[in-house]
Every structure is written in C-alpha cells, then in structure tokens.
Length: 106
Image (cartoon, rainbow, N blue to C red; front, top):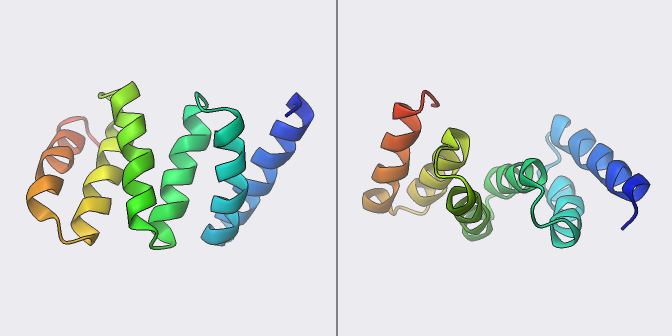
C-alpha cells in the first residue's frame, strides 16, 4: 500500500467514523491495519469501530493488541474493559476499567 493509498484509506475511515458509519469504517480500517499493523491510531479507531458496531470479540482482540503494545494507553484499556463488560464478562472487565480510570480516562 502506497503512502497516498494509506492516507486515502485513513481519510475514508475517519469520514465514516465521524458519520457514525462504524461498519464501513471497520471495513476500511481492517485493510489498513492488515497492511500497517504497527499503526496504533488506525488500530485504536478499528477497535472503536468494532465496539460501536457490536463486533465485541473483534473489538476485544484489537484492544488487547493495543494494551499489549502499550499498557499505559488508557483509552485502549477503557475499550478493552467496555468490550468485556458488554460481553457480560464483568470480572475480566474490572481490571482494565480500573486501570483506565487510574490513567485518567473514562
């Protein structure tokens, strides 16, 4: 994927996200993250898109990858906790949610 294509994909994904078109955003972002797995901003937006489109297992997976790469990412911790809570996995959600709150997020 060329830099121009990456930029174009990012623009399309953020456009869909701003409109609340989370499924469309996720489709674009999944391709982008597959090409650029270290792009944390794209992965974070992908996790949000999955969360908001109720693809909770996928949201959890992306949030776990973000937390593994940077445990101090409060927003990733929050997304992980909320994804787990929406799956009724409240005991598992408690840790990430507490850590997000300690990091000033949520």
